[in-house]
Length: 125
Image (tube, rainbow, N blue to C red; front, side, top):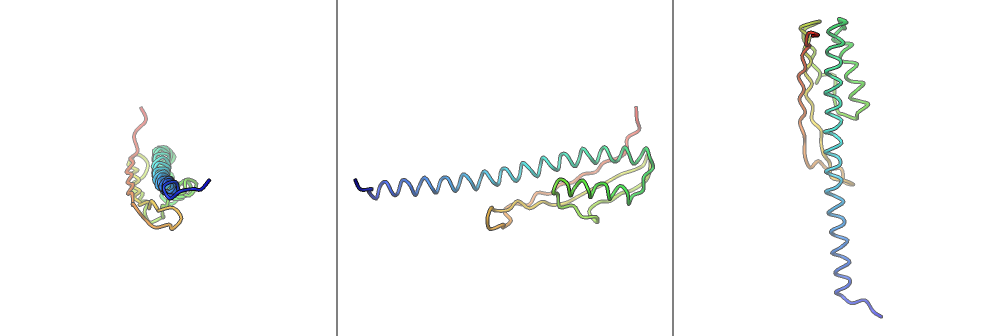
């Protein structure tokens, strides 16, 4: 029983489709993971701005707390991308950063997603 050229072509086509599907799955997974991590980081920013506003924490302390959280979530946030203005009930924190979505294996950028957060202290009700 021999395998004909048609059978080999079908296997090659199937392999190609599996590779393409894997590529798109990885890109979608990477994008969803980064978006989810950013959402968690944004929620943490809201918590920190309220905590820092109530307790009168220093801008340096706020920046360090946010950098630690960004590192835990594997977000590429640098200290210079965190702007802390005001204090107590005028506290405002802005964070802007970009995340590169890479091609698997060769690690080449395919897409760059920009994340922007601007969180202000709100008086307790």
